[in-house]
Image (cartoon, rainbow, N blue to C red; front, side, top):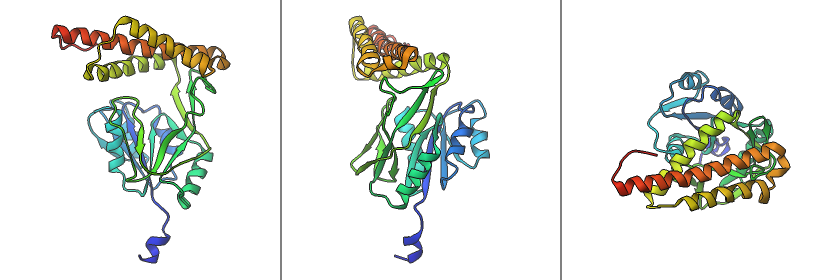
Length: 264
């Protein structure tokens, strides 16, 4: 192998999926300015997302929306670097995480790296309730991992070796309660559709039990109460998301039995 190829630093690509993320994309891209390449896959933004991304040097691919897992794989497949860092537009690479990524790529010991994620919920960064450290695998040698094809709650799948970084990925997940409610509605509908495609037909009791279980898991078992009122708010929104997922799946099953094609 030529010496020049052996000595060159591994190229890092960043893969981001977007839709109407004009309020997030500039800060996200600024946090990964150290990368060799940024690929943004956009699904029909009607705001300035695409223009902002291109103005900051990203390669933008405009396409349809097939769900989170498939869309993230599209972004990964468009990357040309040796390594890929997959981000959401509301995430930021902290300076400490940047330094740790650069050290890892200079002397990689693993094929995949996971990192803790610090998430923001309506006014504060959460420390409990399952939201911290919330390790997520996002950095990987291209070709060693891919995302599951799940419509929502996709995960990185790999048979490669996995290492762990210690510096946080910063996640501005929910700045307002309106954003929380919007996501609860959107995610519960997508999850209900997945359940319906599997032939599930839950009853109201199932929805109630899952909602209560989600609240207890977040607030009690994962110590959400230690985050004060925000921990309670988070537990309630998690309970709502779980409850509505099964209620919507129940209604879809009823419509399927009636031969009705309308959504929930």
